[in-house]
Length: 389
Image 1 (cartoon, helix red, strand yellow):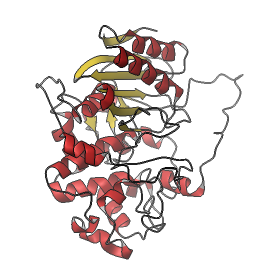
Image 2 (cartoon, rainbow, N blue to C red):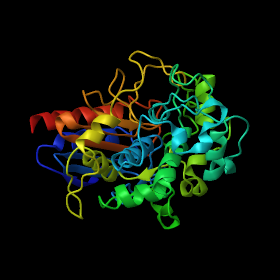
Image 3 (cartoon, one colour):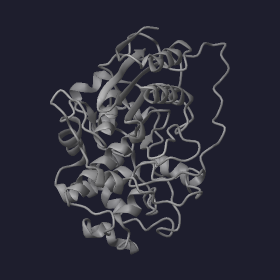
Image 4 (cartoon, helix red, strand yellow):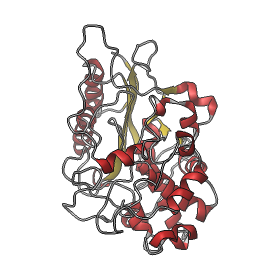
């Protein structure tokens, strides 16, 4: 399978790993991008836009990346911290007074961003249409009591993270999170990262799928090896509101702001963003640096305890200020790295020790979120290339 794009000298191993993913049919359509020392060294896309293989997956394709969006939102929060608009140590209620309801007045921004606030879903029933309404969701979250004692443990806020963190940005900056990301992150880097997709770009979004079309003789798909526990099921579905077939391929969900899970982007834009969090990064508009070293150090301080099992994910996972930090069973595990993966396999992160940032996006969903073998293959190849350069 041919792919298109750019591969710098010394980085062909990444392209070879990418071609393996496509040729083996593990991927249907995908993109990967790597920045090194502030310059793009890999930016390729290939495979098919749709599982029926009617059109190619190109560099112009956009992809929904689920929780990989969280790293973008966390970067937006960090930018507000750097500008003196927010503080990780202060209570959320200082910036969002209504949040103090039901004993949440002392929840800090750091606790909120590291999934320790006990708000992995809302109290009561929700409809799909309500999930798409920003004001409804932030009001419901402000009026929900913590579902576990704040700071006692952490439980992955799979969908709610985006409204909680995004409302903080809106309260202190005045812009909604989608506009902030566009104007302060994507546009300066000459990229495309949408939370709230403009209708004119909908035709470029590759639909997510779970695999190639099955023939009549194929065995039925097997259920996942581990079913979600009650906490994770509520977190992922928002008490069932998102249990709508094809929900994440719907244009109304793409157009809404669900910044915990509905970011739509390409690999180059995400890799460029992470690069610009630790070094000056080349863009069509010149060199761009989004954060200084002091802010980067603050936003990557681990907030959850080593060895603590996430209440929702039921696995050990460590979080900083919205970013996942290195731990076992993680596709990116180099010391000092930070980023986020998304349901199905997408992942984007920074590895400042290697002067490298990385992003992989795809349309074929698989079971593993943080350890997808397709992503691991690409990351290992990129890491070797960086080490050799």
